[in-house]
Length: 263
Image 1: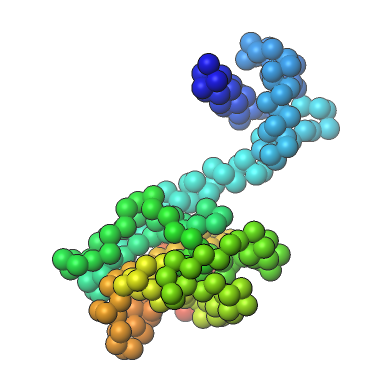
Image 2: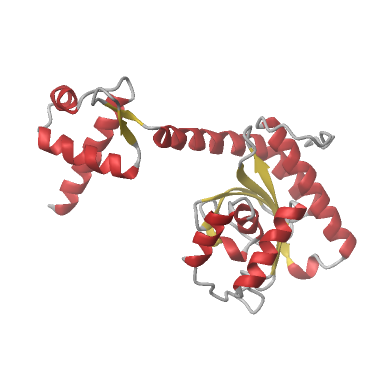
């Protein structure tokens, strides 16, 4: 019975959202149009107001808020960046014979949304939807470097630094220095901090507002990525690639546009 009730509640919330997407409405009008009890509508409206997804207007009608609209914009950006990034992932994976990945940030973790695996028999395998703690992987460090000082403090205050390997950074001061370095250089490295034998590199992809919306990454077997020239080549390539994708997402940089073009 509880499960049925919860599902019905979700259905009703989406009915309210769908109706409000056409025009603002007063709660009583909304209840009439949806054939819902006024007290039920009021309960859902109160929750949505508290979450910040709807707002009251001076005439006491309600409408979807900018926060709700941002959800759709972010979702659209994710679809767009996945489509734009695919040929670049293919090129990077072919060039370095290691796995090329695309990651997004969900607030605490990096989530991998696309991949092109290494052609080596022994390789790192990531599945779309796989997640990793932000502080322990290269893509996560990229996202953390984009946080404002207050946001980063809040993240760290609520974080328990768990040692996934002996290389995981579990000292807060050291992690803050690492994040500052990523912010300064524009790239991040994972020195077997999440999994022993895995080394990763990542650079940020930005949207038209300059917001970091994704990270493009190279991940490979650590013993294959020890030569300093090879490491610099990887970093240089993903820096150029990330800038190119960002430009195609509408980001305007003062730096010269790259000439990198996917095969």
